[in-house]
Each structure stands twice: as C-alpha cells, then as structure tokens.
Amino acid sequence: MSVEVFDPHEAIVGSFTVRRVLPRRTLRTVGAWCFADQMGPAEVTETSGLDVGPHPHMGLQTVTWLMQGTALHKDSLGSEQLISPGQLNLMTAGHGIVHAEEATRSYRGTLHGVQLWVAQPEGERDGPAAFEHHAELPAVDSAVGTFTVLAGSFAGAQSPAGFAPGLLGVDAVLHAGRSDWPLRTDFEHAAIALDGEVLVGDAVVRPGQLAHLGTGRSEVSVEARDRARLLLLGGLPFTEPLVMWWNFVGRSRDEIVSAQRQWLDGDGRFGDVPSRLARIPAPDLLWRSSSGAGPA
Ligand code: MN
Image (cartoon, rainbow, N blue to C red; front, side, top):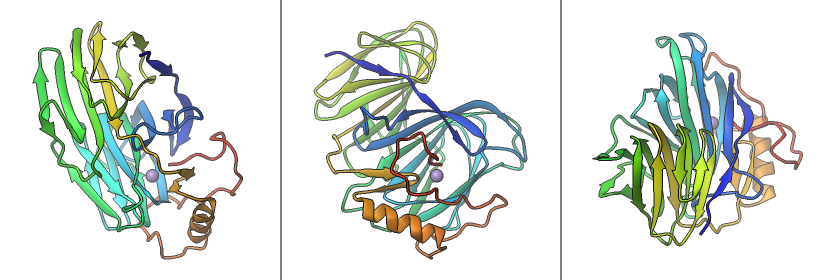
C-alpha cells in the first residue's frame, strides 16, 4: 500500500498566513477530520495575535492545539480561555456558535499551532454548542518519543475530550529512530508533519505536508532522522455527503444558504461574542473553489 503525500496551500486566517492540507479536491476528509491548518511559527505581541474576529460555525467541532505560544479563545457561550502547548481547546458548534481568536494581552513571542475541524455526525450536528478546555491530556512515553492523545485512544491511553466515537488524533514528538505504530484497519489515517523530516511508510514527509495512508493498515512504520513532530489523524471513513462552505459544514446547499443569510441578518441562531475585533461578514455565495474567501 503506497502513501500519498500532499503539499499544503497557503491561506489567510486573521493576521496569519496558514498552511492548509485539508480539505483538498482529491481528499475531502480523513475519517471525520475535514479541515487542517498549520499556523505559524510567527511572532505575536500582547495586542496583536491571530486576530480572527467574531465569526459563526455550524455542524463541526474545532480543535486548537499549540506547539508554541499562547492564544485566547472567546465564544458566544461566554467562554474566555487562554491556551498553551499541551492543552486542548475543543469547541462544538452543533446548530450554531460564534467565536473569536484574539491577542492575549499578556504573551509576546512565537505562536505555532494547528487548527483542525471535525465534521459532526448526522445525529449530533444540529445539537447544542459546547466548549471544553483540557489543561492536560494523556501521554505515552516510549523509546522513540512521546505520544499525546488528543482524540480517541492510542497505545493504551485515551483522550478525555468529547468527540463522537471512531476518531483518532495523536501528536508524536519523536527522537531519531524507527518504530511501528499500531493502527485500526477499519480507520482511515493520515499524518501531518509539524516539524522535521519523517519517513512514513515509504514516503518522505516534510513539515506542512500530509501523508495519506488510507484504510486497511494494521500498522505503519515511522522513521525520524532527527528530532521531528508528527500529527496522526484517523477515524472511521466519513460517508455522509458533506457540503462545506466558509465556516459551515452541512449536507445541502439549502442549509448553507440559510446559514449565510442568518449570519448576515444578525439572526440569533449563532449568538454573539463581545470582541475588540470586527465581526467577519459572510462572503457572497458563489459556488467556487477554495480560492475564494476562506474560513476562519
Ligand atoms: Mn473559527
């Protein structure tokens, strides 16, 4: 089974240029993971950070995971949460939520992290919004490195984060060396290189790139030539017909049209979050490729 390696493309989110590897035309999802941005490393100050103003989401969960620095999350549930490396922010949009990513007022330095989205399954996607902050996650130390479990379970450790079953997310900080990682054959898997060059199966994966492993593997061989960092994503293949547009994940064009109209009209569906940043208007509904106004 060969490994297919994809290059990221650049997009603008707030004041950051990000490297996006999901979704792409030929790979919409990996399990229920439907979006993956790597942001930074870039310098932020007390008053200038990610700077993403209030914007809505529906039908998805957002995962924020930092390798370096501190960021501030605010949402329409009243959450206001600083996040640092090793911690997980999980926001569930369900029927609707609004959030903003602001400067911290306290941190100056480098910011480097990922933001991921998970498509919610049919039975949950119209449910209530929620926000979880996990100050610590389970980690497994081995001879080849440290594996932190963000979602699902891996190597005997289980994430406490509230994802639907059938999802996997693992951040691996690796020393030089080779190891075989156990995988579920019914899961689809991919690995995103965060730092350093890694050999995944027979493919060289460089920072920012995504290696798609597909389904049906009981293990994968990973070799780091030097210190490296790899994000393993996986899950049961997502078979529901997704329609993704801007910050919305739905099942039909009609749902997207309604959501866009409701946000533009200031409908109460999504709620509100006080922010020093301006609310982000929904772009025009042109059904075009991802070269248009991007998500946040
Ligand atoms: Mn967002």
